[in-house]
Length: 131
Image 1 (cartoon, rainbow, N blue to C red):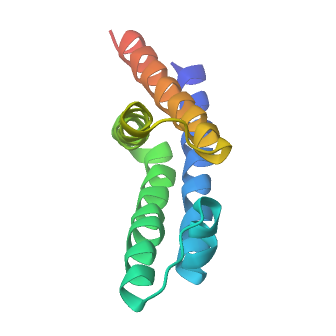
Image 2 (cartoon, rainbow, N blue to C red):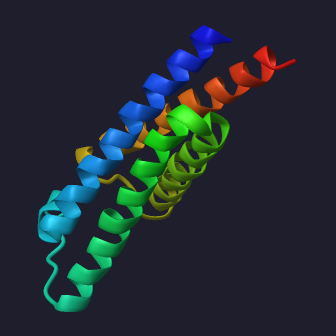
């Protein structure tokens, strides 16, 4: 159990820090986040929306993952499955609907898939250990 807990803790802290990195970028300069996909944020409402979703949501998710690494590992892993899985679903659906996106999107699809798979594997390991 100790090894699974340490691996889970490390994974959740690193994932939380990655979320925080995106959050800080989006809060400080929302356009910088959208430049990766060539989207121009031409008005206050657009910048507000990016700050809210990519900034605020990622900030609180990242903080929860770091907290969860120490106090609520199962719940934090479930959040990463839902978050990563949601992105994977949306990206695959979009690819099937519209075709081949940029390499930036393919890279993120891979990262989000790995995030989801690792989270599911760690949840499964925790369940096995707790039996």
